[in-house]
Image: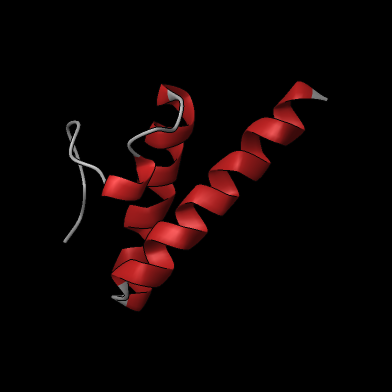
Length: 57
């Protein structure tokens, strides 16, 4: 199930808004390809954190 409009995985609840939104965007793309919500959620959060970590440097 894709996530949108403030609907996001519960594990994203306590993440900063920008990370949560980026993670949701990434997870939706992964979900289209793999169909596996667990992988999409975990990978989305990991990649969003990496994205913003690189942005700071």
